[in-house]
Amino acid sequence: MEVLKLIGVLIVIIGFALKFDAMATVVIAGLATGLVAGMTPMQILETLGKAFVTNRTATLFVLTLPVIGLCERYGLKDKAVDFIKSIKNATTGKVVAIYQVIRALSASFSLRLGGHPQFVRPLINPMAQGAAVARFGKIDEKTEDEIKGLCAGSENYGNFFAQNCFMGASGTLLIVSTLNEQGYKEVTAANIALWSIPIAVISCIVGIAYYSMFDSKMKKRFGGNHAEVKK
Amino acid sequence: MQTIKWTTSTVVAEIFYCVIGIIFILTGIKALKDKEMKNRYFTAIFWFILAFTFIAGPYFPYWVTGLCVIIIAALTAIGKVTQSNSDVPAAENTRKAADRFGYKVFIPAVTLAIAAVIIATVWSKQLGANNAIGLSAIVALIIAFALFHNKPVQAVSDGTRLMDNVGPVSILPQVLAALGALFTAAGVGNVIAKGVEVIIPQGNRFIASAVYCIAMALFTIIMGNGFAAFSVITVGIGIPFLIMQGANPVVVGALGLTAGYCGTLMTPMAANFNIMPAALLETKDKYAIIKSQLPVALVMLVIHIFLMYFFAF
Image (cartoon, rainbow over all chains, first blue to last red; front, side):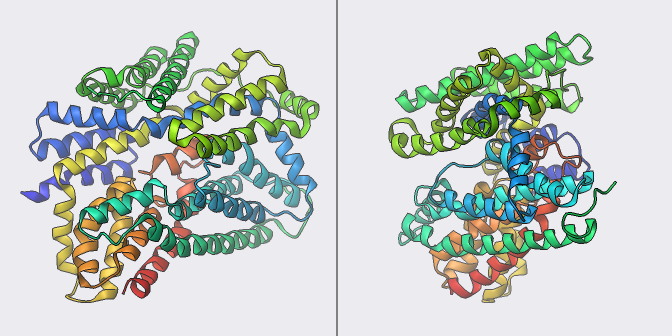
């Protein structure tokens, strides 16, 4: 009964769809998959523990929280709004578009510029929100959430689609090692990086188009430039 | 038990994991001190166990950490891990500080990014790329102290405030990586590849390109991890249905992984990109980021399919 091994996949889908506690869903899916595959409870615990310890890197962002917290206390958000207000004709879309391009460039040089805690929360989101407030006066909560989505998205598009342009990126090396292992020795880090450039460029174009559509939507929702303050 | 190969890079890394562990402990202590808080003991235990896995995890048999993961998952499952009272800066105070420090307030944040780049570029061989994050945080913190003349303890309380703010979701990526390891050990990928055989007509290159890209995205959606999906789907679908039919393995590999990232943009399983930042940005709707990314992800996935079809063959 090979198909039974998919029980973990099923648990994950159901757990997330029904909005059960995410961590518990994932752990239960893992335990169930291991049991169905005939692993002993001890083997399951060891696999789980080993992966958890070796993947502590995923939680390194915690180290940046103290300095970000401090900057926020000393007025970083306020100044971001001041800054964006000082730029004439800046729209939310333009702020986010500029960020995505910068993020993509830095990713392709393997510069660890970004991260949501380092840039999006303290810099880009306040700037994008500030642009909307400067242009349309007060904005509603739904729009605020939409702008937050755009900002977080721009970080992800820039990061994901450009990172493999760097030869030493972990994704690039994963592709190379997987295919070399299967006997395709012509795959090298250099040609994977080269073939990652088209999608990096396209992702920036798609992003810019999406943000300018958002700007038009905002204009429709809240009226023309520098409109009266809406309630 | 892990046998750590002690080099400058791993020593520094373990020190940073200890610092993270201390931040977890302080978040737990913050909860204990909040006498108003109903779940303060459960919340504190959650953070303390988590701290233990970060600080001491490598020196105990792996099953100990595995057990810890199950306990902390049980604590979040029963809804006993909640936020405690934080010293949130008042709007009038931040405004006053903003007027006092002006744009200089950006210096520590910019330093955080630039120092990481410099450290990663100059010392990556000696220190490892991952350590650059922690080292840049130290540099940025020193600059912040020099600028704000605040008490250093303020950094600690602001750090734990944000940690508490992000909450248990901050370690979801790590738990997901562990799930990926279990899936691989159980051979979940093979089962999926066998099922796919049925839907690809012999020699139809366009459908094969589409199936590979969509499978990468789908599997990433399910696992929340493009890397895990890549090894499974490329071996299960990419090689037999594309490369062995004459596709260029370089193009298949390069586009395959980023096709998976289209899935990353659509899934709550990629918590560190889509859910944790939503908590960090304090969105009202915790799926606000995924909803925003959905149209872009779908357009990018279609583009991947066409690029794969035209460039790989």
